[in-house]
Length: 328
Ligand SMILES: NC(=O)c1ccc[n+]([C@@H]2O[C@H](COP(=O)([O-])OP(=O)(O)OC[C@H]3O[C@@H](n4cnc5c(N)ncnc54)[C@H](O)[C@@H]3O)[C@@H](O)[C@H]2O)c1
Image 1 (cartoon, helix red, strand yellow):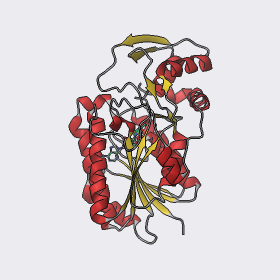
Image 2 (cartoon, helix red, strand yellow):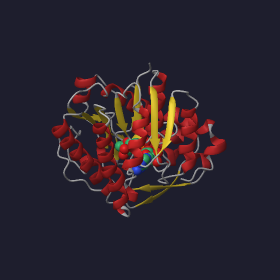
Image 3 (cartoon, rainbow, N blue to C red):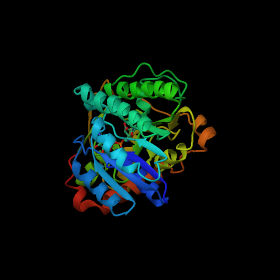
Image 4 (cartoon, rainbow, N blue to C red):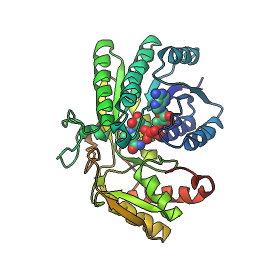
């Protein structure tokens, strides 16, 4: 009998790559997603089509805010072998949009997380891996963000919703002793990425010869982390017991200007950049301290920035036919 896992947000960027990894390792994967309209749904449909090619992948369209529907799905998948974990990646994503729609973010990211935890308890699934974000560190002045750093000063509604879900998960672990691992991801990029994030927007704009709106002077730094490394980190973290918070980041922050230059070199075409004021919700810098992650699960990223961007760029080149129609 194959091992089973439940993966929410499976049509999303990280969910898709995580699903592929589990399927490759022979798991049976129940994927859940509501296919929301955070960005062009075409991308989500394409990702799902890929996952559905594997007979061990089952998809259920469901909103994690809908507890009774979620319970029915869990009941169905719980028959026979019990899933060894729930990986909760479903979330309303995008820092900037969270300013105008805070309620939607809290509904999916906090109440949705509560429903996932309730299902885990009801169906006696003893492990939750829950996605959080480097955004919880806000505008930290620390050189690299350790999981013991201050996180009670988020600067966006998105970060606040994710921090709230971390606090909720902590209480659930204390009360019910269920194993919970919180993973704080740092600016993830790679093939099949998100059209609301800079690597996708910059590459597509360059290839379409369209103007790029650059917020700030481009000297802000992000700890870009390649998506396959993130999927490996998720997989490795499923074995942890108790309550843990880990960073999954690259520990090597890169200037946004450096990303733009790398793309320019790969395409041999200049970027058409229009600079504008940086936004309050955009932090200036992110950098992960991954000492604890290495200690506990022996994880560190293996993809160098230049290699990761080059693989991502190649994927964009190879998929021009349909990608050029994706709204950015
Ligand atoms: N991509 C990054 O750089 C990054 C960084 C930090 C944290 N994260 C976190 O990682 C997780 C995955 O992010 P991603 O980049 O793949 O984003 P994504 O938006 O591509 O994927 C999220 C998926 O969840 C689904 N979803 C949203 N709300 C839902 C709901 N209520 N019910 C069911 N499905 C729902 C969406 O339709 C989407 O397919 C999220 O929790 C996100 O907050 C991502």
